[in-house]
Amino acid sequence: MKILVLENDPKELITIRQSLNINGNELIPLVRSEQIWPYLQSEEPYFLIANWDTSDIRSTQFIARVRAAKPAESFYIILTTTKSSDEDLAPSGADDIIQRPFGAQELKNRIALAERIVSLSSNLASARDQLENQAVFDSLTGFMNRPAFFRQSTGELERARRASIPLSLIALDIDNFKIINDTFGIETGDEVLRVVAQAIREKSRPYDCIGRWMGDEFVILLSGVIGADAEKVADRVIAGVRGTRIEVPNEAPLMVKVSAGIASASHINSSTEIEPLIQKARQAMSHAKQAGGNQVFLVFV
Image (cartoon, rainbow, N blue to C red; front, top):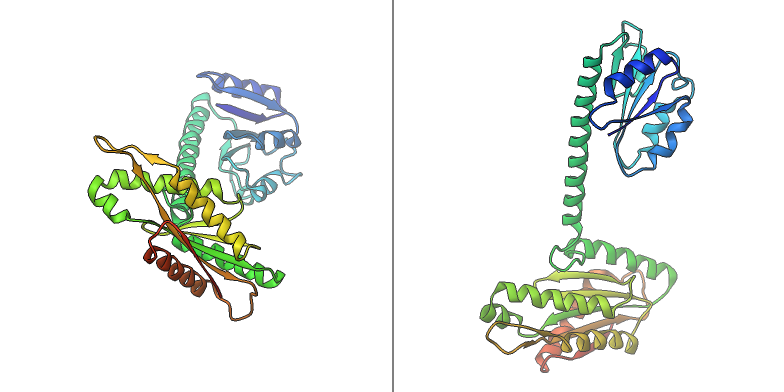
């Protein structure tokens, strides 16, 4: 563990060093608060022990600036002071206050407590990130889930409206997916979904808005693309899926196929909304499936 020490009194520094320079701790002595900032760029948590009475940490309003900057990793601040009351320290934003003189064991206990708090904060942050990802991305394919795609595509539609550019929406569905799932099981079905998602990812532009709409159905919003150019994108995806084979135990490899429907809008006006556009693309996709599947059907809206 790395501990920054902002202490100008040599005797106090020796006490801190003797108390904490064990168990693999690395103490880094500093003389000015400005020297702390480079450590805030690190991707690992740091602890700071600072003398509130003699260092420049108060005059530079360092703690308030750190809290406002919100460093990516936890930065736990312990202040030492000779004051018998912490009333003057309350606005400082410190995590802990130790009154001098203090014993080695007290300092060790405070650091141990700080470690537990930082560890808990890190775990909570990691859990929050996981929950946020689950709220946005489909875990199987890595694409945006339905609510996230709807929000993102609505924003793209507004940008297209303001910039007066066309856009197209592609809906894709795996042919005979239910039969595949029922015959070979959910694991094979999931593998089919991953293969199709990979083909969509490879054949689309990096900045295209892509989502898993429901089940085996995917949607792609193509900004600035219309008509035949949108068909080319859908054809590339279909060809990419058709060129893959999924191995099944004791069976011939599965040859997966998809159908695509496209709704193209050359003029985005005040009445154009994303949900009707999605439904038009899905209707076009159903038409492609009824015509035999493994093909594209385009409509202009």
